[in-house]
Image 1: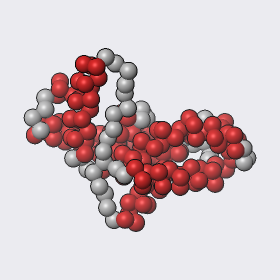
Image 2 (image 1 turned 90 degrees about the vertical axis):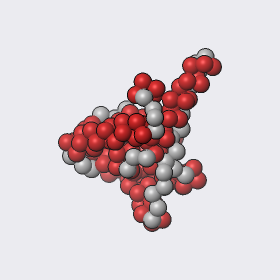
Image 3 (image 1 turned 90 degrees about the horizontal axis):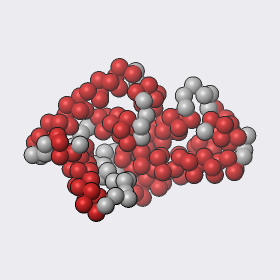
Image 4 (image 1 turned 30 degrees about the horizontal axis):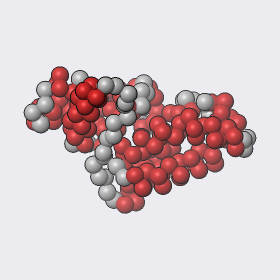
Length: 179
């Protein structure tokens, strides 16, 4: 992906299209989980990829290209949220599929329960869990995206999991019901 970004930096539109094809879904879900609004997500997506196009020449390779792109998306999302002065609850969507109907139904129910619980977490906790578990980033990469120390990421994850367990308990959901 770093090679694609180098080509984008030199003005290669095909490389930009390929970069978009490879990353758009991940970036879209990340933005959506932060702002919770489809229309707003589309607007921020356009801004994000415009900024990626303009700033590709500034990518220094200190992090992975995708981590750098998440940082841009995060910055623009929070800029939009600050501008509107609202932090709405986020609607998590299921992205799995292709199983038998019974398994699919159970999985949807588990996901729905977990999504309801995640909505109740503070944004800072939701965000670290989202990057780690939905986007598969490592702690170091999450720290880069959020521009915070790795130990702060670990602390937020610890507290997020603790709060999530409590929320699930309050909802009457047993741990094994969502695993």
